[in-house]
Length: 466
Image 1 (tube, rainbow, N blue to C red):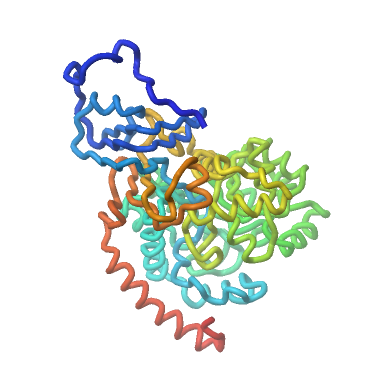
Image 2 (cartoon, rainbow, N blue to C red):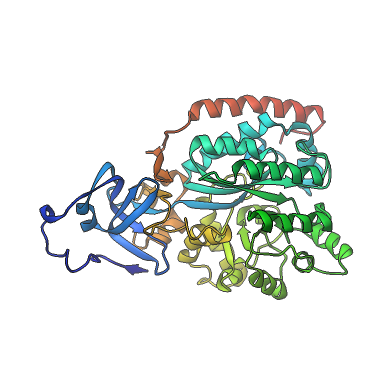
């Protein structure tokens, strides 16, 4: 950790505060322990972050504040200020299914797909996205990557709350709520991409569900279209033994990663979620391709599918960031609550207490996640010229006192309730845990009402509401 306490130019040092020609700006965060997450992992113990419009225009120590006159000042009294967290993989609208059938074996095929066939609709997607968005803002997630149906409905909720998101329209070979087949799914995705391609905070994307739930022709078509339209492709990859077996049958014993590479679908636009069942050769192919990886620790271990070699991928400089998976899989959308498990489980599987130190975990939640989504030039760190996606973490809560190492405190002590303020694109959208852009109470009320529909549907199917 590199601490910088006095970095202003020598021509400014020694001048009195009245000598500064102050510049008018929109927002200034002062008296902060600033974790920049820049290349040098610079920390300012008594730091200042200056924002004008939607960008960071300066980061430095306390002297920096004398140069600016801000419309809004957040004096955070020594709290941690850091880049907004980036959730690299989720299915936000499934928040309305949270806690259903948590321990059912082969839950995706035996429970989730049948449930979705009965309940997924535009209204369900809107209600679930609103709920999940509020949850994420309150736990410090400012950007997320989503895969689901009716993603144009998700986009509307993201636009309203003020978050940033990469939204992938699902493509799958069997009939679903918004498409009868994969070709219709691709057509839906293309319309969505056209509608949102110029949005300042929303990146539209393709989201083929998985290699084994799509044909080779579909995967190749999406890969080609993604390059033509310069949009991401999000996919579940190397996640399960079912997938391994299906692909091995289809592609002469190849692994899912080898198969995707062999058909030309492993490229720089791809973001592979889970990546549990990968070997050395797979990792070489992933690195060569330039693709991103979403590491979803809680969901992976809860489903007993295994632990991804995420630490090895990180150390190999692969683009890898943290995700939660959907709220029916990992149960929360809180990246902060992944920190502890990511650090500890990787220590356990590597039989090494020093493995996955806190700095690597926080890097994977910020710059690593930005790199996984190919957004590292605009978000992921607090640096001049980057978009102002910033969160403030309470350092005075009982579970956070004392702090000797801020990275250790975030990984081993913090929880999602410690997030005080969330700022996206230079706009404060949560202050002192109060939502400023949407009505949280109304969103919760609507979500609670929808649970009645879910309960009735599940009971009619003869399943237990577990």
